Image (tube, rainbow, N blue to C red; front, side, top):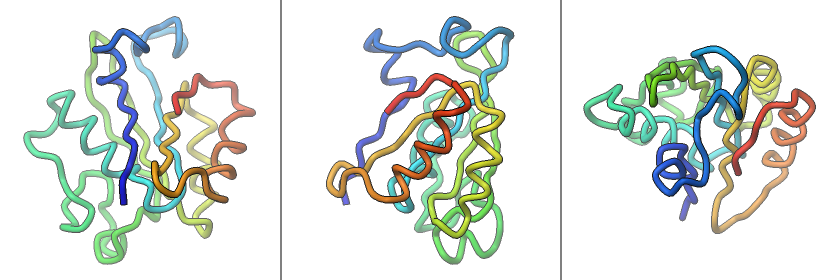
Length: 151
């Protein structure tokens, strides 16, 4: 599976997007969520963002069960996110609270709870499969809350 990863760090280096007060509200903390269909690469993206920000020395792998945000035993065994998990790191003078959300339809309520507190969301879309049913569902959940979005 090929996954198209959209990382704020990559976008900022290219000058396309910035984690700035203008985009994500006032204050020094930005609440950013990672949303997508199951197996689109949300946890992998979270791990890479933590690595790029210097919050971890090595990125965890979902298949190895050593990711920061998949902490429940069942998540590590099954290789999926069941419960939304938050982690934080510093980025260009701001504190970023990053929320990794589940992609499986059975855990949609976790996404709904998370999007209510977000300043913005990163929608991950699988480059091969494209937008799938749950991709559209999480997008519909996030849009009414008015946060900035990167897809």
